[in-house]
Length: 306
Image (cartoon, rainbow, N blue to C red; front, side, top):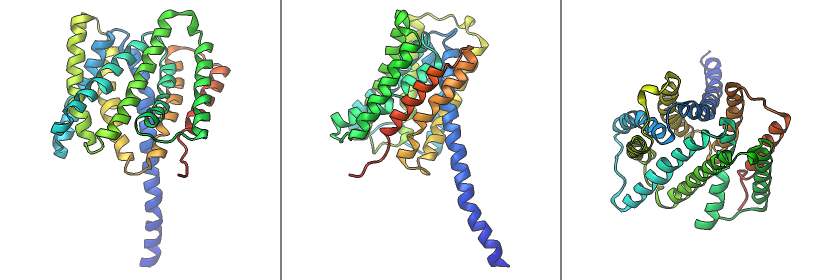
């Protein structure tokens, strides 16, 4: 009897672990996929600098509590103080302002598709700064991805509106800055805890963005709608903190290559949810080129024999 009972239990454990991993993966895809719509709603009544600052100021207390609970250091190592400034400015401050600015002119779904280029920029920067090899299949994937991206932008009619082009460039610049930061982190910050890496930079970036925003943009806080406040709370508490925690839980369960496919999947959620909210139609061409773009970028993530 004991043997008969133990066998189902032993078989159930891998199944349960797989189910939990799948649920966590879906949560990350959903939280990151809805981030873009959250930004879109936030900047409806909050200027981009101020919105980015408020988002991080909302997230900072939870990150701080998490760091204290885990007894993680808040300060970077003394030799890495320059790296702390780099992360604060190049990962949190400037890119999130650019994303907020871009979403004032570009749909949330297209923003997600544009930002999904970020792993490709990581590949390029890794070849330049870390001397990592780019394989022919990866070059093909990059060409397919960016060719499809060009067709998506042209199909959206962005060549008719200068403001939309500025929005596209802002989002692509944010993706480039994030990619560069990932590569520099791999070279100079691999020994720094991920909690240390995020906590203090988020707090300082939030304060910096908020102070500059209130001085430059002079927002009217009484005019901020309940929808925008709700979006900011969602971005700060769910997308930033919740997505972060679940993502690093998955790092212990999945290989980095498999987990990186989050960047291929979350734009699909973003396009569907954004089209529903914004009342736009997902055309056949958009679906075709989006699928081709994501497939091209997926090719760049396939493992290669060295």
